[in-house]
Image 1 (cartoon, rainbow, N blue to C red):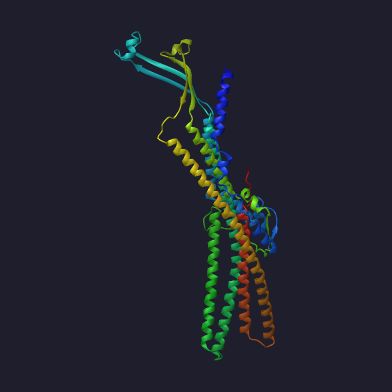
Image 2 (image 1 turned 180 degrees about the vertical axis):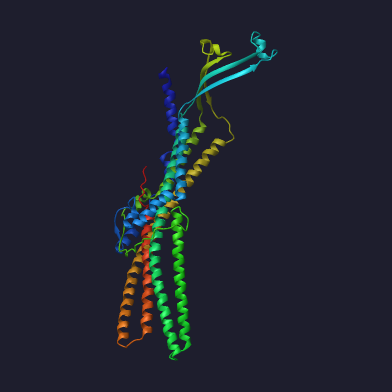
Length: 477
């Protein structure tokens, strides 16, 4: 008997294999990794990039800031958007388990007790005149239901649901990467802005001292009123810049608190250390090949492509017959006293085959829809891959420009410091005026502010580079 079933099982296995999407179908529109080695080589030749490893899991610890480490730990634990994504992942996981249950038989237990008054002239009493008009019926049964998955429909639906769950996990990792890079960038913005605020306060003092000196000259009829008006304008401008930077600091604090899942006015640990100038950033030399495996947003697209490929395979199975087996066994009696006797046993076995003949093109349309969605996901993946390598190339270009400007600006700051020092010596020797000293002190402060702006841009590019490389994420097939 078993030997007679082998040809049928072999035929089912053959069709099951044919129903799955072939590798050719999956990859016919898929783009290969785009080459970014030229930009990397140029960045390394500039001296501002060196060949290194991919970012570590806790890459932010390389900045050696306990405050920053604490912020990211709190953000991962409390950020509401991240917590919502955690529940999306869990929801997708449970949904995949629901779909997986279709691969197993269903077994139910039923118990029923009904009290009935039979019509004397009804059909039941006519065939059973000895049956009492008042009675009840008790039923106990186990029912069994199973659909044979010859065409791998439910296996593919489970693969699709599981793939969606993996895609949600990758998107969760992408959200963690966005949150951590945002906190790191906000940290450096606060550090730099605090330093800039100190410089702007000094600029206000310099402008006020110049205006005060000009007023004394005006009172002694040693100067006209016109230069004093310019000095007053400079004072107002310096105060405006100070107010602007203080507003930026408050706004950045609000952003950090929101990222940490707190109210905007919550107390924030601000024991911040000013970073030193960055000299060289590290970048892996195999970015073009391994970027796909290191970015969670690309991994999410891959998982969704795999899920849609499984849905296409499942849609093909609808063209073939479904084979079901339903059965139940139990006890049925009109009295409890006889319910557990052999005469009360009952049961049935109900095999069934369901073959679609005409459904108005619904099955074919469903297959074409799934295939179109799969092709769309492939092209979305291609676009994201191109966008990713462009992002890396743009960041490398920005690093070269910013680091070069930072070196030049450091020279400008040093020159301003030297000019101020020499002018102070000249003033002490009576060869120069206090106005010249104040002017050069103002220039030195402005050059220092420009230097801090470039320092922040350096760190911003360092964070963007880490984000473009996927942080510490690794795709696991």
